[in-house]
Length: 107
Image 1: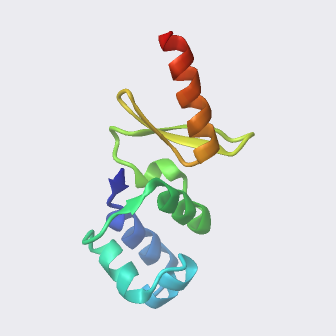
Image 2: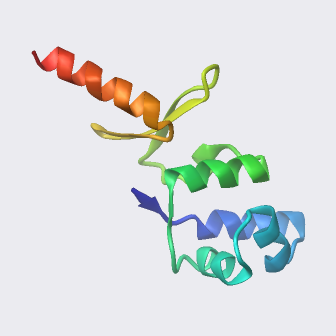
């Protein structure tokens, strides 16, 4: 699932009084890529949102639309995106475990 995060990135950059070049360096992306992200011309996946939130010290939820929420276990660093009955986890191992549990409950 891809998400557009440009508005939040723009406000974070303006709050910090950074240039696009400086923000791109912080987020480990090229300046043209950052510029496209900020203008919502490209989107990012959940792992990138988590990385951006961590690098900017912003709660992940602030990057997500109000209709989405984070289901996370901070103790084990497992984070998942919940939207209706759709789950996407940033931790592939955790996602595989949950798929196996789903199969067990179907039997």
